[in-house]
Structures are given as structure tokens and as C-alpha cells.
Image 1 (cartoon, helix red, strand yellow):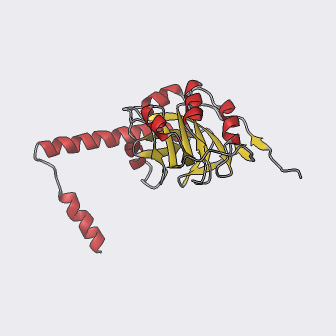
Image 2 (spheres, one colour):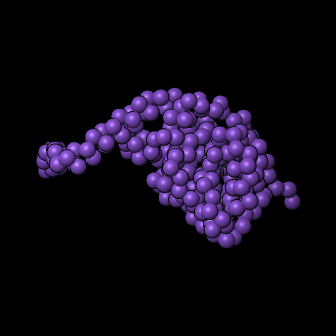
Image 3 (cartoon, one colour):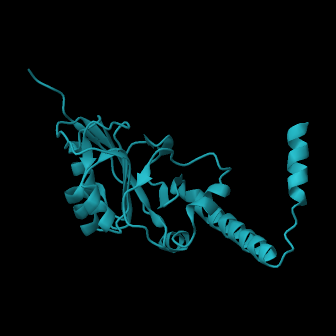
Length: 224
């Protein structure tokens, strides 16, 4: 009996501009999210690494395979360059882990800046000791199959968020966002404005001059 096991492979998209990547590293995901109408980003994926001060930022290399199988992800690492984030659509399956200590270690060693897995990981104690970003839906000790089939550099969905090859992935302890590269400059500007407004609010609170009249307007709107 023959079984179809091919992996569909597409070239990786151009990488994000280095200056924009550097700017994004200084911006929290929440400020970027506030600038994207608060209706996008992952839901249900959790960080499994040691927290760091800077934001994870990289160009998306995407991979999709059936749940619990990581043959495609092993091959997808060959499509990753230093500065990329490998985004894995494992269909949210939690029966078998598709990433663990070994695969994440190798990814870090070749310059990948993060792994995003809509599926399960294992070796969590090891992952939590490292600063290398790993996000996943859940955990199981059960290891992966390696049979395929799969696809590399196609649009995928992780945590309810569509990620296209070449999107800019940002992540911190609050969660993950995928940003089309052409939108990055404007979002940086908007996020900086959000942070400036938040800083002014904190100053006003400390000085006892925080104007809370906006709450009356919000409540009146809800009552109409």
C-alpha cells in the first residue's frame, strides 16, 4: 500500500527591515494591539520560556501538518534564517507534542528567534529555563510522529490568528500578534503614542489630577 507523504514547499518571504525589527523590540504587544482595534492576535497560546524584557520580533516562516506529526517542522527549519520565527499550525492538537527541548535548542542555535506552536510541546522544565521564546497551546509527554504530509510557507492559523509567510511576528508574556510588513511603520508610530498617553495618565494619577470624567461619558453611552 502506498501512502501520499509529500511536503509542499514554498520559498520563504523577504525578511523584515532590521531597523523596524529593532524598534518593535522596545514596544509591548499590548500597545501594538491597542493600535490594531484590539480584535486580532492569538487566543489560547501560552509562553513556555523564561520572561525577558524585550519583545520577540521576527519574520514568519510558516508550517502546517496534521496534529502530532513534526516531519514538516523538521524540514521547515531549513527554510528559516537568523531572525525568523517558525510558526507551526498543528491544528491545536494536544495528543502528541511536536516540539520539545531538542528541536527548540536547534532552532535557537541557527538564529531562529522564536517558535509558535498551535499544538503541544514537551520538556517544559527545560524550556522554562531558557529565554528562547516558545509559545504553545498545551503540554504532553507523548512524542511526535514523523510521517507527514504537510506544507511550508503557506497561510496558517494559530490561536485563531491568521499568519502569512513574511508577516512580522511579535510576542511577549501577554501574547502574540502577526503584522503585515507594510503596516509596521504606522503601527510603531501609533504604539509609541499609546505608550506616551499611558505615561501621562500615570503621572496624572501620581499627582492627583487624573480626570475621570470620561467614565461618565462611557456610562451614558452604554445606557442609551
